[in-house]
Length: 228
Image (cartoon, rainbow, N blue to C red; front, top):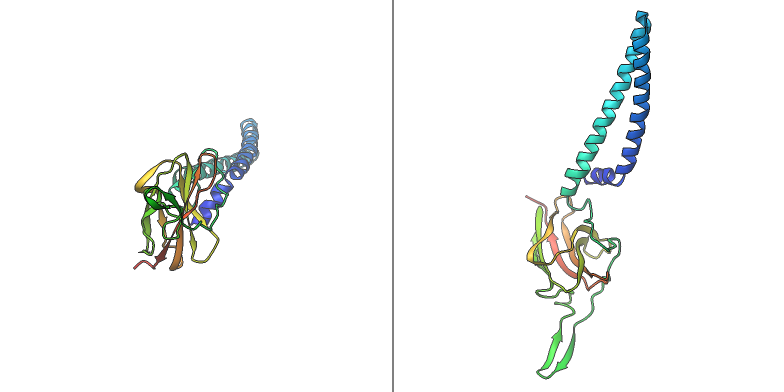
């Protein structure tokens, strides 16, 4: 189902162009058949013209119905299915992949002593109260459709997106994206895991600032089990 919706969305313009061309050609033939039918005197000639008129009109109506159906599917149905479309945000490149290797924690000396500089959180690149997952948590077991919650509270936020990949794989699939501050709340989309092979997966939360500079990704590990 997802593959069909993605195919219809990707080639929407082509389908409209082909349908429009068919409608123009069929409408012209229908008009010609109507004129012949109107001017026919003999019964056999009139019957032949009427049959051509009916055929042309059927093609026109069928093409219009197909175009309307495609418009309804791509406008109202496809956007509600997670992972089919990426949300448009200004001045972003959704194909850009941020670094998958997160920097190690560092420390600096202050008047109070050594204060950790948060560049990673348990070596996962997460920033408590700034960039973090709140549901699910690292190591959780999930199934079915999951409402993803987290925190994206950074200065000069450009956009964020969240993705998943099988454990040990570098092939990331975007679930959804957004460009508004989120504090321990829904990130904007549900994750349907029912079609995935049960096993270990990684979830990562990727943030770019308003100059399109990527921040370290916040990555957690979850286990997907088959729904009962």
